[in-house]
Amino acid sequence: MKPTSEPSTLDLLRLHPLQQRQARHWLHLGVLALAIAGIFALLLVLSRVPGASQFFPWIDFFRTALVIHVDQSVLIWFLAMAGVIWSVADNTGTLRFSHLGTLSFALSVVGTLLIAVSAFFGEGSPLMNNYVPVLQRPLFFIALGLFGAGIAIRLVLTLICCQWKNALFKAPPLQVAAISSAVATAIAIGALGWSWIDIPASISGQGFYELLFWGAGHSLQFAFSQMLLLAWILLAIASGVPLIFSQRWLGNCLWIGLVPVLLVPLIYLYYPTVSAESRIAFTRLMQYGGALAAVPVGLVLLWGLKRAAPVTADQRPLRLTLIMSMVLFGSGGVIALMISGINTIIPAHYHGSIVGVTLALMGLAYLLLPYLGYKPITGKLACAQPLCYGFGQLLHITGLALSGAIGIQRKTAGAAQGLDSLSAKMAMGVMGIGGLLAIIGGILFVWIMLVTFFRRRT
Image (cartoon, rainbow, N blue to C red):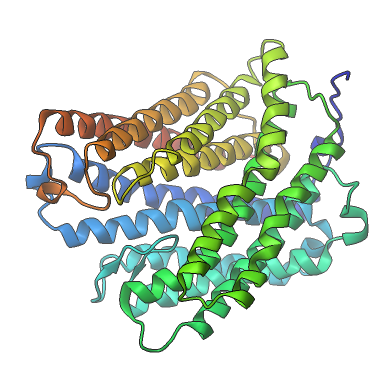
């Protein structure tokens, strides 16, 4: 089959000024979240490097910093980029309900800032439950609620204003990814409410929040996967990668990727939230359902990358980001096969997968800049950023995987890590070096974006 390169998807990025403004706002919020996460990540990595624990004697603060880092770098960053995608794809809702769009953004900004502030004010220990770790402090929960309300408003605008008839089976990836990620996010919110009602009052503490966010967190991963695949497709098109199938075919693949999350209500109907069967069902849903769209789209892009012509200077940062994202996301999947026990192989797996998504969304941010009224990013720094971030994270997850293989437990710091052997110290040293390189790469991204934001727009 002859490769095709349709311009339709990139043509859709030519936006109304109001769309541009709202998409810029959400992009600003995403960069702010990464900047906050980077500050807390620096504390995290330094506290785990061998020999540095004497400067970080407060294990409780380590866990507090970990809560803020995870929530800012995953939940807020990803959902802020969802706001970008929803604003870009939804000209109807953005134009008709601009006041609600402004309100949703304002609530999300306030929530984001207060989540960071809550690390330093109030009492209440951190809980390291999966997906959305929490600080047991009123300010934290108020902030999380404000951010959630802002995202929910933007989400509702997308769902009620999208053109469903035209989107089914014949829309390009941008519309499909926007709608499908919005549907998955809505299901995640529904799962959160269902879990809240279903959990017995006798359960409290970390067990309560683990159960509360388990179904919602798994559901939300499908939204993030749709965003990842959209970013890959757009980066491939923009960087000159030939596609063996049409963009409409790729859009249909994204619809297939939504199918597993539609089964979430059935899990709640058949199994109580507190049951082991419910936990296993959600694990299997993500384990097997996540590949339905990722595998065919990934194979198409790998075929295209193998046959792609050399990039131009403008395309190079986008192509590098695409490649590093695919490598990291694939590495996270491979490491998942090694998981056995509660050790650092688990964070090695999800750091690979999550950072693969993060890199893809960083590339999407680069790609969107000229469509949002900014100058495109070019030059050595823009090329160095995905390489530094990507290779740093590869070292980071390699160190974590090796540490887990020799028994180092996850979510520990300092003496609690049990670094008694030379091999353990070397593995964690590799982790620390990789983590610092990744932080530098993250700082470079934030710096590049901030410089671009403060320059005069085109």
